[in-house]
Length: 85
Length: 85
Image 1 (tube, one colour):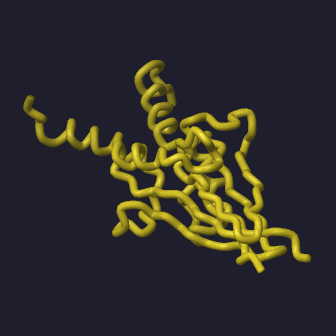
Image 2 (cartoon, chains in turn cyan, blue; image 1 turned 90 degrees about the vertical axis):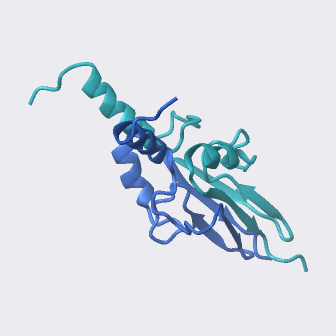
């Protein structure tokens, strides 16, 4: 099974690269980008889930441009802490 | 500017579709999938950021298979509530 150099390999690579989500290449040195964070009582944080934010792991609205360009419908995760007593 | 029917349109569509992240087509009826959730004092939740989880918005480890298939390095978001007093 001989893979002709050039186009086919490039296309396979481009197809594979196209499926990547972390296109801002955030923490590429890590095999897996796991974020640990906390939310205070009465607090709230808006987290990015499109991997395009300039303030990753927090959302900066970059999903709007991504959705327009791709027809996708991804959006952020909003996490609140417990109510303040 | 005439777009030849068939291949070109299909390729553009496939390229565009390939850039989508929400491939499990979660809540496709919504223009933007925004999740609101809360974490209790002493609590912790693991949220999906690869949009492949069967228990979305929570993580089920699906990012492992995605990363292996694409060479990506995405991983979950772990959010803790404030310490219990």
